[in-house]
Image (cartoon, rainbow, N blue to C red):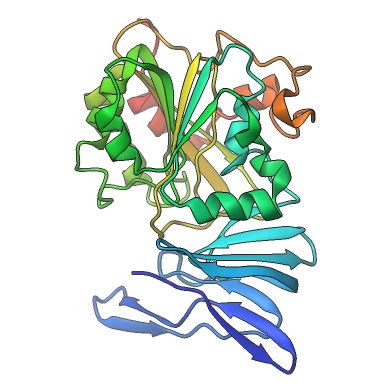
Length: 333
């Protein structure tokens, strides 16, 4: 079910809100959940996380438009700086942005060992909006190692030679759950074939707080396909309580992919799955090429969030979630 953003002006104030949603209640009967529009506030609500909503006070609207694929909104919030919204779902804020979306390229540029970065993005308007309103995020596109491909990532993977990449990062809009169109298609097989032996996939992998069964199913799917090592990690983003992928990268060639589809859980926790193809063992908890904190990359700015301690802590799970790691994460032979 889609929740498209709507806008209204009331007494000179602007309100953005997702519309009223209909979904199945606990008894299996249609249930109407009415979400009020509050003038002057951006609000977000989804039946995927019933009983709660997310609000930001809007100071100024910079951009509102619609591409062939999605609605986009950029506004100035009172507490988190500029905010970027896709199809009614908050994507990024200036205050706590540490490398999401276009910022992935910026963070990869810190790694001198990376030789080439292929980026697949199907929506050119998305790139233009980032460049205009979030130049510090989009600066990664200036890296001379970056080659931008305006194409669906699945089609691109079908066209590349086998074993060409050391790492593939799936920067998906929403988690790839069992019901996701990519879960049952050839996508994972295409990724596996594009990776060298011991090559790495980093993909968004749900939250430990919601739909935990999906994490186990995703682990099973990836382990069956990639047959190497795998592990689960997590972190938080205060203003962005939505699933997304983060990156841990220490290899020479990088591929980024973007899918455009809404629907995810909200809880302030970001989860991600790391897995490798059959071949040399990959220890995700101990990178072979640790990042040099003095290498600022294309941004000429120091690291804002990541460090070796944060890396180690990302793999420490609460007691109730340890079963994901114990049952599914593979260990050194």
